[in-house]
Image (tube, rainbow over all chains, first blue to last red):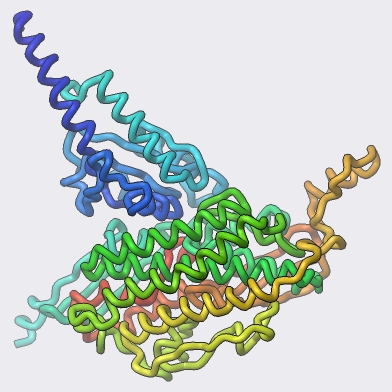
Length: 154
Length: 390
């Protein structure tokens, strides 16, 4: 690969990442309580459309961000893994809420202690339940990540 | 002939990731063409082991977990749980606290019904009401944030009263809400109630008769949608509900549209209750000072500090006995059955949730209906999977 090619792919990566940054399509997969705040984030006051992310897709094949919103149980874990596998590359995961991060208050026999034991996570949003502002802050962090790392290499 | 019949049947898996199952519900549908022959609800995708968790926690520690049962109406869960524990203790609650409790519970009921209305309209295909109802819900969130600092999980109602007194700003917000909300609600009402598409999608769909509704154990608005005049606030009154004037709406049709009308009217009745509470609310204590769950505000001396520590670890000693208390929640009857062996932690706690019953009444309701209607029936029963699986 010549120097020119590297320069072109670098520039292309910047352009594509810029596009992707402002058009994340999240997957509609509300697991528990946090789903209500996820819905509130997409509703009128918080208006996720400002981030270009108002299109919540019901099918994983159309989505590129997986918001794991809520408690992940052992029965649900294979389903979440399958959903993640069905999403096309590049894809990112946001673990929303204490349950998705560490299991939260539910330290029981049936709860997966952190969604990162099942799928790789890019951004963690703390809180029980996190406010919509917190979710939007996570969005900004995800955009930062794309700006710094690009999205073609992933 | 038989083999042709066989080949026409299709099994379809709906969920656990499906936008209209209101959480992680899974239904296995058996279809004969467009007709639903059988539905098998599969639960357990959000089983968090709450009942087991309760056995290892003191009564006070379990309070925040109760919030996560029906996460759309946390205040009402808190209230039901506190009333159950107070019944076990035989504890009185100051009158002001009773009023505050009714105010937050009715606000919670409105918030829950608003989210139901928005998501039901979304499922049926009307996007606009979702934004309208969430706008009003945010106003209620603001009020709750003012009194307890949280938007979704409040932990505000406590055993013996409430956590904090309500602020003057809260009362102002509440009055403003009561002035503006009925007008805003009329907008949503005007969009849907006489809308021809809405009526075609909901009338004569998912009918459950008077007798079946009782036999299948439905409760709350879903029961009243079948013409049963049963509301625990009237029939087994608790708190200050007997001193308040309100009607129990019920419609005899038993279809999705009737359940829709019941909930819409309940919102109006809640506003009516709130108006009375704003007028009548007395001054006084917001927490029973003799409640053993109240910690002394002063810095305790050494001996008392040890006692306090032991109280925190082992919990307050409770009377021996078994009690059941059911409260009228937005979804139906939420009941707590507590077996106490005298320790600071419950020996066994059974949580009777309305959603669990409603999910398993679904096959009865949708059998013989069209596959497109199952979405509206699911929405009209208004279940939340945090409650179904516990």
